[in-house]
Image (cartoon, rainbow, N blue to C red; front, side, top):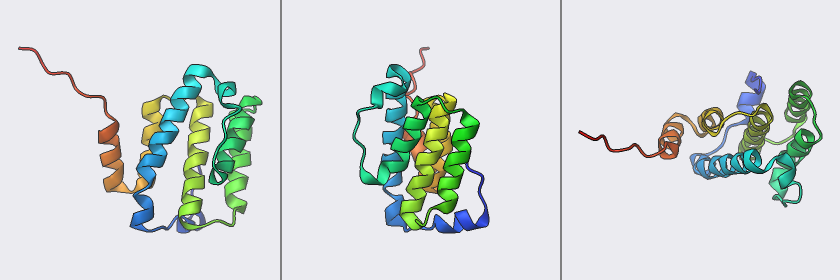
Length: 141
């Protein structure tokens, strides 16, 4: 889990339009985590990721190499603390980092969703959580 301080939180600031893209990003990370749970971390070794996903590729490589969760968390915390990014770019890096740590921990899809949804802001987080809920069965009399 990312340990927040005022400086990191300030660097997350972005526009509502940029935040609108986050539910799609989070859904793609949930799908990636599902694939990794089914096929194993090494099943994604040849997958090409976008340039802005360098931290994701780096983190997945470290998981595949067997780094402990504590070491992985330390490395990623240093990465974020020394990053020169801000705004939406920094926000996505934080989301990728949270996802990497959650994948390394073996968290369920539901727990990963609960960790990532708040990055969207309260209203969008609740909508994302609702959209990801499995459909309820009709009750029989």
